[in-house]
Length: 102
Length: 387
Image 1 (cartoon, rainbow over the protein chains, first blue to last red):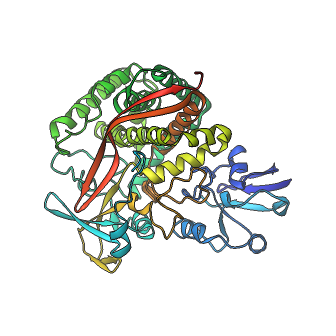
Image 2: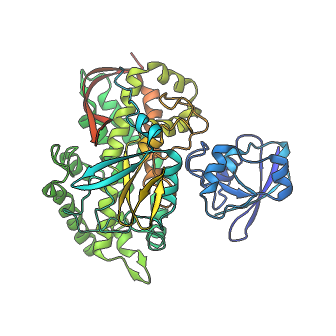
């Protein structure tokens, strides 16, 4: 089980709990504004872009080549950007805060 | 070769040159073929423009037969963004539960009609009907309106032998004019009315702007959806084991839809006009040159996709550009995805197998390249799961 906090572009904070699936799916289920997940998680749409803290980025690691290529052409990309469809909900993410990029 | 096999027509030239020059009514169009280049050109709208003369970014160009601008397709940010933001919420309605239920009912009724019929022509008797009836939901108009659109046939916006037949396009334009006049007097909660109430820079949309948006909605979602629906049915005809696989694991339907969009790429390409001296694949491009972003080629790029010529229903990483890319990604994609998901769901629930009979392929010609994009007709028999 993981408790994850999302902070949307307008500053709203929402903490949700998940057990399985991807972080994008968890966000969509909980109607987190700015996370659409249009492609269902196959890394084709980049509508699930989040920013991690530097510590969490180090913990979870850099994006894969395909994910990095998607992010390269995204608005609001930073060194701490990830696509949340590529992050699995697990104990490792418990307590993390993710900022929605768009 | 199986009917459902769609060869990668661009493979050789993509790998050797990365670009392909074709002629469009005596104008050179440079097709951009590699995934990375296609995405970059789509993203950098400042250098690769959509907001040029109406009709110019379409291939073949419609400049000579169309003066009205398709909105928001034929615009660049920031204008594009302003128009699009007025429409986004409407085009996301397919995610709502009642929309999904109605679309499921439409699809289910149509599949029930064709089950165990002796022989059916899939394009006219199923794909066109499904596309048209589903479009009534997107427009929020009575389902009976679909009868008019179905009566136009599959080639309403162009003759089969002449893609630039202005008279054919007029059928749609007149129809849209009539609908706009109707809702001006009796506004409702349909897309025409919503657009007429929409705002751009502090004023309401003009009739021209509403018409431009409606033309895009009709034209952009017609051949593409008809081809996608037909091709998926042909695929399941050739691959009954895939119907079985999805029946056992329906959770993969979303991934299967993305894979079908990648593999079939219903829209081959879309143009841009160069606004800067630049180069792609060491090929010099000059101001006012026309290029096209070839989604179909990019979707088979082996530098990005493992086994690109195979349909892998549960492909996990699938950064396809079948719905375009970046600012101009398809506005109707939410509707298309929902429709195809529901179609597959209903097929696996009701259909045991699909027997494919005679068919005629729809082959596009782009310079020296011939690309199969779908079918003019496919005869088939659908066998019910109940038998």
